[in-house]
Image 1 (cartoon, helix red, strand yellow):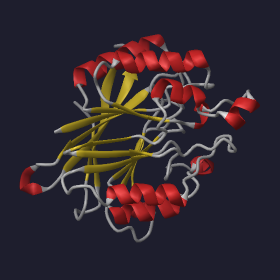
Image 2 (cartoon, one colour):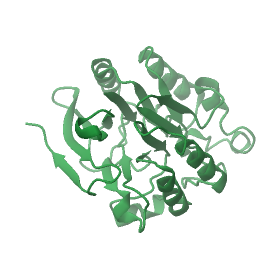
Image 3 (cartoon, helix red, strand yellow):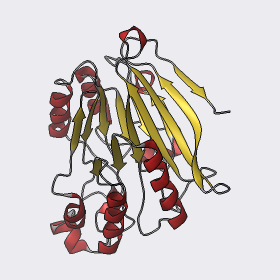
Image 4 (cartoon, rainbow, N blue to C red):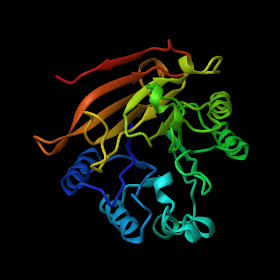
Length: 282
């Protein structure tokens, strides 16, 4: 069994200290094989905000992390920095690679930098990025859960969020499906949900799912949804030889000051029937 913890839109600079502490306790209890930070790590890409993010990642201990930038991780109020060195602070604390990857016998995770210095909020994926990711996916083993991480979403649940959709998503989703992708993780709009992309995009070559995370740590929550993270469990050796994948949504509880399991989505992969089962704990 492999466990992936998806943390998104932490927006350090607007983080809630009690939620930070609760999330570190959850991570310690879960002992994930990988922590994915899917963009908007900081609120305004400032040095002290990236330093706080680095301290949080360091507090995870030896747990591997994969971090991609979001639109908030590029300077907004410093035009010279935005033009000449948009990722300077991000690379200072998280390394030069803006599109990191992680691989284990049961997991292949590929980061994609969908931010652009010339765009304010919108994200974009190029043909070069699409081909690069597809080439890696095509080399994956049958046992691996194949995950692509973008910041902006490839599918949304509300009409008002369509303006936030990733530019180039149609080509990307189709090509990555042919290459064998299972999940596309995202953030950006601070709403957690799971969508079957094989129902959203006509003619996909396989079952593929969009897994969106809420804001993990910031007070900049949306509607009635509190801080939220996703826990993805993958068993490559489930009964009958089929891969088994579950996405759990964990929300912060103001009452208990802990993250609590809110919903569980059991995903059908590959040739299984395209259906999603949602159960609530208790």
